[in-house]
Amino acid sequence: MQYLALIYGEEARWANLSPEQRESEMSEYMALSQATVTRGGNELDSTATATTVRVRGDETLVTDGPFAELKESLGGYYVFECDSIEEACTWAAKIPAARHGSIEVRPVYVDGGETS
Amino acid sequence: MKYAALLTNNADAVAAWERMTPEEAAAARALEVPKWEALFNELGPTGALGSGFELDSPNTAKTVRVRDGETIVTDGPFAETKEQIGGLMEIEAEDLDAAITIAAQIPVAFTASVELRPVIEH
Image (cartoon, rainbow over all chains, first blue to last red; front, side, top):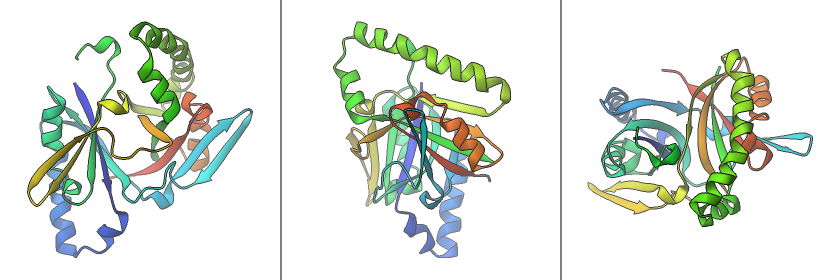
């Protein structure tokens, strides 16, 4: 089964870290990118670069900013291949942002509920 | 440029899905599938669409935090918002305007929203 680990944290925090702290956390992220369970993932640019698109009737409405303003915002995600959500949660706990923010673990939808 | 498109659903619609019987959900899903097939048929050959993930309902989510060395796992999504992430899709587009044109063709844009975020390439 595949799980997405959505990484939420306070954006301002990173700017306040020392170069050593950043390097240390970045190496943890890089190590997780190479982990056996990891199938993908992306780091997202800041919410200041977000654009939200809605279509109502024939009109395309484009607004600057994320779809929801949150204290902790989505900064990236990993795709994990695990046997259970519990196993995915143990990997999520290794993500540095779990120590100051929140990781939301979501099963990828499988039609008919079959495992793949 | 690579963008991540966060696909959202309205919380009300998500709640309605969760109240459906499996048969009702299958019927409702059958109505949605052709819209997505049309999108993939049109944009697939252009190479604009990268990996995509449809997520299971937010009530299947777990939220993980580590505080003082202890892992705390709670049931449910991280935040209760009016629109909730239901999927994620990578989009390859020349610029933001081109990405917006693609986002405006994704079925959830008509009922909820698509948030575009540039991906930081490492």
